[in-house]
Structure formats: C-alpha cells, structure tokens
Image 1 (cartoon, rainbow, N blue to C red):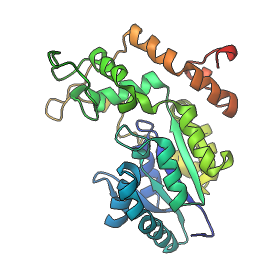
Image 2 (cartoon, rainbow, N blue to C red):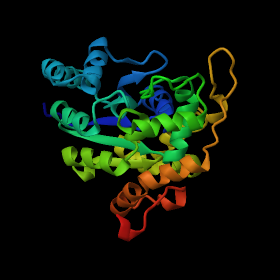
Image 3 (cartoon, helix red, strand yellow):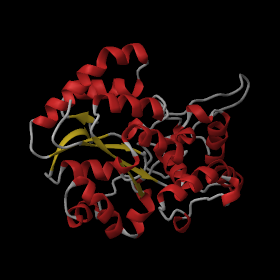
Length: 294
C-alpha cells in the first residue's frame, strides 16, 4: 500500500481544538483531501471509511481482522483520488471507548504504513475540566463503578466525577492522559520523526509558533494554519453548558485535593515526555517530576 505522499493522521487528544482543526483547517480551507471526521454529523468521506475507522478504534481482534484490509484499501483509494495531501482526523483514536493506544497505533500502522501522526496535548487538569463541562457532568463517556447503595445523581459535581475517574481510571478519560506512554506507542510504530506532538497551550498563547510547527507537517504555509484557526474555537469555555436545554455552564473549579492527585499521577510521565521532546511543558503549567523521580 505504498503511496507517493504519506497520509496525515490526526489522532487526538480530545479537547485540544480538534473540532477547530477538523472544520476550519482540514475541511474548509480547501487545501487538503480531507477524509474526515467532519462536523456536525461526525461523517467521513464515505460511510465505508466511517464504519471501518470505527472498527479500528473500537472492535476486538476478530472483528478487526475482518475489516482491516478493507479499511487500508478504502484509505488508499480515497487518497489516490486527489493530488492534495490526504488527512484523516478523529480524536476518538485516543478515547475511553477505544481500544488501548498501543493497539490502535499498531492497527493504523497495518493499514496506513506511511503516515505522519499529529497529536496535540493539553495540561491534564485543564483537559479534565473541559471534558467534565462538555461530557462528564451528565455522565457521558463515564464508566460508573459504584457501590449498590451508593447514591449517584446527575449532574455530578466535578469532585464527584473525579471520584469516579480515579475509581476506574483505565475505563475513563483520565486513563488516556499519560502522554508519554501514548506518544511512545505511536513512535514505536511510525518512528519518532513521523510523530509530531504539539501543545494546546501554545496554540492559545502563541498561535504563530503553533502554526509554524504544524504547517510543515501539512505542507502549507504557517499563515494558512494561523488564519484558519484564529477565532475558530467552537468548543470554547464560554460555550460549555450543563444541558442542551438550560444553557447554563457547570461550575468546573478543580478542588485542590483532586488537582494534587492529577499532578501526582502524571508528573513523571510529563517529565519523561519533556526530556525526550523539549516541548516547554513547565512553562505551560504541566506538572513535572524532578529528574530523580522519573
């Protein structure tokens, strides 16, 4: 399945301006052969690609074995229909519902052996707060491991939701935020040079710098990236709500107890990623363990 140009795989994370990149940059700019996902209907270029990408993310080995060759063929055919750079984007590649990142990365390597992988990370407390406001407060994507007689009323407070996150971390979004391990899983498949890690906070504070890093991967000028993403944040904090009916935002101040536990859980992983990648995570507020604790 060799091709003249690699496909760009934008695999996550959720809540890192993925919607803005999908809509304003990949789809509406007209510069890419965009295979999906598209908003608001979560569609791909074809229903076949949609169904097969879902299988790559979600299905067990038996079902994946039956679909992998068809997905590889579908992506190859779609990429060949245009001279534009092919881009496939879905943050659900790294998601509590998906297979583990090492499984998904290995599957992607099977079907798209020549790819540039784009990943955007976000400081974990900030990402968890955003996820809670958009999904967690009303239990969306929450694996609820509770006692029989334990009361649970929606909407959950942020503290209650964090309690359930830590009770079953491997089944919830918090289990997806060990950035160093996930990046390493993709590096193992594609090589470090083909895995491009960007920082959400840089997009917010230094959009020119962010655009300058992403543009060469997409084979476009930084000005195009900067222009497409300026003012395009659909899922901004100001638009978060606790239900479609009320439109009122859920309070999302992280209690200090939970903030400390999040920092403790990820400080070593963040420090390992910083040591390998030099992303400036400390300046962006990421918890970093001292060198001796890595």
